[in-house]
Image (tube, rainbow, N blue to C red; front, side, top):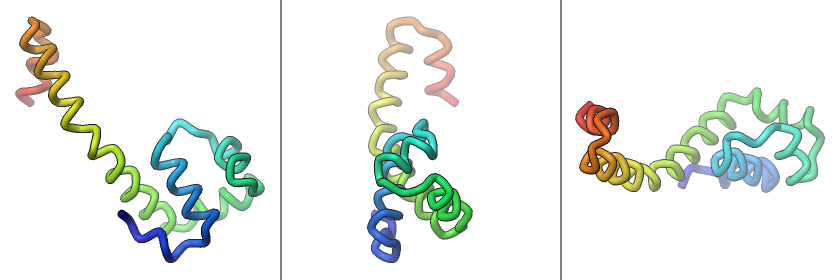
Length: 89
């Protein structure tokens, strides 16, 4: 897990939320963790915050990758030429 211990609890919670669902807006994340959107924007201007957010996202999404590859292989086996090309690339 990325080094979230160095962040305040609300900052760590924001990182977890964004890493789990990058489609969330700043307004949505701010509402969940109960901070002002400007506070969240300030945190997001910190390169260390963003670096840890990226690392955590990669940890979470990396667990999904084998399933995605397997699905592409299954599609290729069923005749989906585009899936086959993607698997081979």
